[in-house]
Image (cartoon, rainbow, N blue to C red):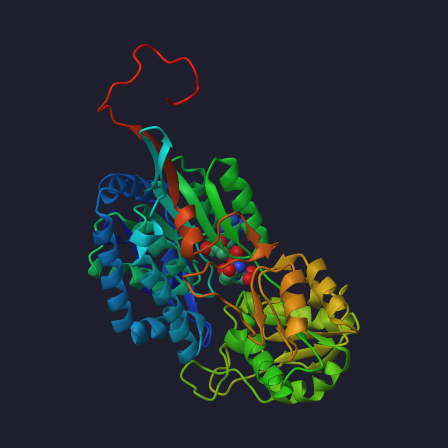
Length: 502
Ligand code: NAD
């Protein structure tokens, strides 16, 4: 703990002030490429979390009255600032995740796109009207904000995932308490500084740091109306059960095991390059990474080309333009991936390429894992059943498309999947029958842009309404219907005892 003393501390953002925490519990923030500690992050005290929630509640009273175009204009200014600071934000992301420069810029860009969508909030908040539901009576609906919303985010997209949440919630008229991953708190704080610079009023966004204890404070706070969570499956289940148990609206995005089906008629060059990129990009630490390839019939002949493709890429530091991806986030994450690789070998899978002993020149302490490829994998093996979250691709073979679809539908996760084929009929059968929420046809990682929503299914999502797009607006708002009549003519006098409106 003493070692932490000299490190710069990450501030909380409470009641419009970037302030140092009074806690005595801090964690190091580490550059995963060097294993050097670059900052310390506080585990916020109960009083600090309570103050953030109270301040967000007070800010809601005035923010909800701000006209919608003004709220939209805040998002326009924010979008502009995020673009101006795009490179700087990407560098910050690289420093705390090890992502390479291009990937870190992509992380920011996918968040900027959500802010652009939030700037369109007026048309997304339009209600409905039916005139003359009874003589001289109209019914119309109003879309109103809920109050204080909160977000709990993972390490793997320090900009994009917070930006999935607070811009939509705040544009809709709510206020927001964000609890970013304690592994990557620096980007979140910079996002808040830029939001303030864009003109966000005091208290509309608050940031508290910490882990389970601070999450539990948010989950049990009566004034928090919604919980948006992105992270691993066991925590997602816990958040969903606890949050809904205390009467909150919850959306919890969880882990994944995304399959790519390769048909014999696919363009195999495309298959190899897309598989390599989507399996090892960001060191496999993407919830939409392809971690399973299902080769149908003679498509198995692609295996040698896939082995060659994967062995040509390597990890490296974020400023190494030749490196395909960066390190894993922590020593613990690396140890977990290596243990799963070992289990795969012990359980009888063929390890075509083993990245366990990967080293990167000049970075002896980084959490590197090389590209790893398994063939001969069976559904019972742990490398198939578990989300590995590393640069590891497992390969299964089946005889038909129907068998491939059945395999995917038996897997508990349902975040994303894709098919590579030259056949429209095969693609049509796949998109119709597969029980997965985001489907790519000759597109490996089918993440929808923010005018759609991020629609993971089954074990990859707990809740009803998804992130961004129209579903996010419904998640962060309540619908009120008004039925109105104005007395400008004679109406029957005396009380009306029927349920008719006339
Ligand atoms: P994680 O579950 O360890 O942590 C996520 C957040 O939950 C963090 O803010 C953390 O502080 C908090 N947390 C951790 N343990 C907790 C507990 N016991 N109780 C309450 N809160 C707790 O996830 P991670 O390792 O940061 O992120 C990687 C995971 O996120 C992977 O499983 C990945 O698939 C998933 N993910 C999913 C999506 C999606 O859209 N489905 C997107 C990105 C990442």
